Image (cartoon, rainbow, N blue to C red; front, side, top):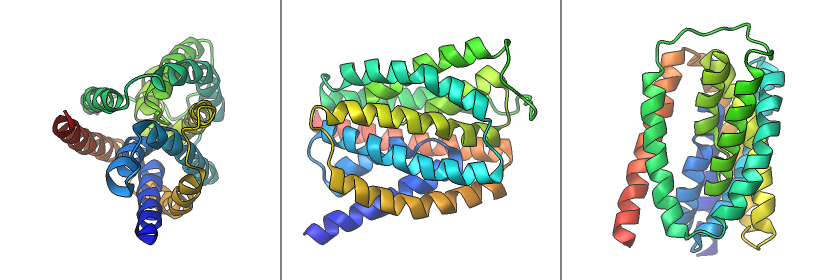
Length: 257
């Protein structure tokens, strides 16, 4: 029934917004499987293109909330995002011509690797006063370009890659990496969605419903993130989301083979 389709889209958007606001990533990790397995979008490429647009819009909401809370390192985020836009365009051009089911399978494997890397980063030293400078600018540009390419290829905002990239490039605290990552998530998502839209792989009405649910979820997630600002707590949540969704996607991919 149509109302179930739209309701599941709104609730799925709420879940994505909650995760984006809470950990700055994982939103697009959830968006694609939710659209395929919960909402019922039949084409993986349409699910990818639509989720990229919806996640970008939800990320902008989360960015606004984090900016008000003062957790965004703007110059670092904009440098990372500017480099990544070029990678996102190239990656999304390649990705939309790649088999959809194989994309989902590779995506799940990549999530497992990133989850392990995030857990290994716990307990590291951080620098709350980090600013853009000659020492970290090349690292931000390199990480942004590579992350943008991977994000575009898989049709995701890429927050689960951007957060580790920001941490490695600048040693900023986890809560700042979460807020700052949303600058790049928004930019990468818009770039990828625009490229997919050119090929007709965006369901605009579903994206609007998804975003509406995400606005509420993002607000709640941002408030929760401030309460759980301890770096190890957020890292554990971040990695847990990645492992759970990756396992589910691998199981679904196995059944489809």
